[in-house]
Amino acid sequence: MKARYIRVSTLSQNIERQLAKQYNNELLYIDKISGAVPFSLRPEGLKLLADIPGKNITYISISSIDRLGRNTLDILETINKLHTFNICLKVDNLGLESLLGGKESPTFKLIVSVLANVSEMERETMLERQKEGIAIAKAKGIYKGREKNTNETPEKFLAKYPGVINYINKKTNHTIEDIAKLSDCSKNTVLKIKKTLESLQKK
Image (tube, rainbow, N blue to C red):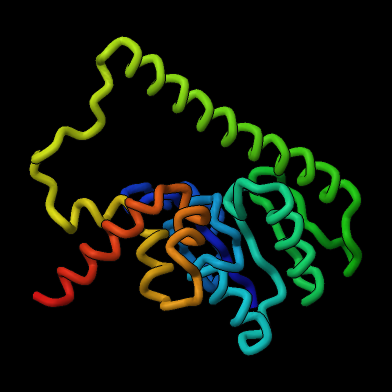
């Protein structure tokens, strides 16, 4: 059985590009969550790993290596985990498969290691530029963040944090601090999301 794993960072992002090379008989697993969250902690990533034995999955496709994540170690660990199940991983934009004749492809391993490092560096650079931009804006007195008392519905607020909501709803042993680290947000944001969810559930 073949499967396809798709990941976008937000609920509003389009998945059509990642479906471009979809096979008719592929099982689909779609996560809408930050690439910083480890693959095995994502709802659909976890489901895919759990489905491998029962659904006899032997081949998994992704559109590009950064769909697996933005952390080099996590990407390589995920690939190794798939290989323990003798699963071949196909990366569409590279046109490469991780296994050839049941053995690990040296070319795939080399290229993926390089790209995984590049992906991680890109994320770190983006976050650094973001921090620098905010610092400059604050120094000039033009950064205010979201204005207080502006109207934002609870639903609109929650839609920005699908990853955090997934962790809260799963009722795991993760602490508020754990969820904040995994989701790249502050502890106060996680607490606010938790309180908002509880408020909506009481209605």
